[in-house]
Structures are given as structure tokens and as C-alpha cells.
Length: 140
Image 1 (cartoon, rainbow, N blue to C red):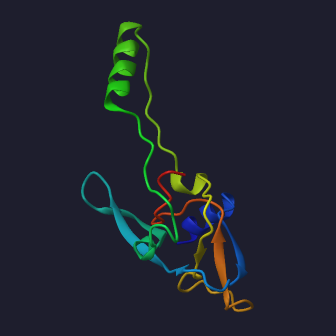
Image 2: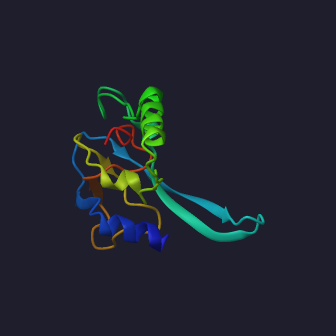
């Protein structure tokens, strides 16, 4: 859990703000997963904080959803070009990719279970960046 929260801090994901009136407050939850090694033995535990975006209503909490992805034809052209010119291609992964994209809509989220600020228990988080589970996260 601490690793996930460190990513939130490093990416400046959200601000703690007073709860606004007449705005939907999206709940959050922790999702836990065991990562296995090649022998099927648990090598590490992973925790991810996600928004319960299934409670968001289209037209109220978000306008549209989509994920920008490359067309299959584009990928094939890239591979053919790389083969023809004998280029080396590399694959990479962006750690906590969603936490790097900005969101434009006003979103307010409840403080995560177990991480409530005792000095400001009535405050909510206003995310500046996309968070797993939000409807608008993939397009960020």
C-alpha cells in the first residue's frame, strides 16, 4: 500500500479540499493482488487504490469515455518498416501510467479507507490526474 501511496505523492495526483455541495463524491477502495514468479510462488503482494467509477453518471460526472490506442494497421506498418531497415524495437511499460494523465472534469473522491486525515475528516480529494477506475481515466 505504501508503494502505491508513494506513486500518488510523486505524481502529485490530488489535493485534499473541503467537500463541495451538490457534487457526487466517488468512493475508493483498495484492490489487492498476489504477484507470482515463474514457479507459481507468491513473489510479492500488490495493492492498488481505485475509484469506484461505476457510480459515475454520464453527462453529470463525465462527458465521454474512450482510450486512445494505435490502430492495428499502424502497428503492422511500424513492424514492417523496422524489419525492412533492420531496426531494433524495444518494449516498455510506464509504471502507474494512469497517474501521469491529467483529467479536465471536476471530480471529488472520498478519503480512502484507513487513510482518513483526522484533522480534516470532512474533506475530500480532488484529483488532478487520472486514477484507476474513473470513467475519464483512459482518455487522460
